Image (cartoon, rainbow, N blue to C red; front, top):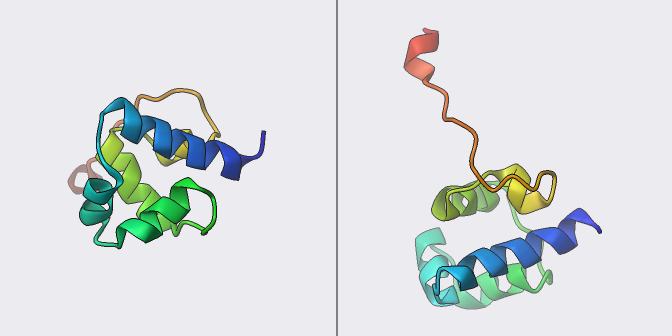
Length: 84
């Protein structure tokens, strides 16, 4: 299965599993509902920034949304302050 096909299915499934309307996700992303709908329908490419915000919103990783992994649990966040 192609990554873009998995991506639109996963964002739709995650949203529907949580009973969240498209309009609410679009509001979170600060985009129009029609734009978000086109992402779910695979009619419009999704910028990486949007995908990262969706991963945070749904509590998963960008790799999961893209279909690169089946592990829904997000990666641990790095502590950038500890690196300095």
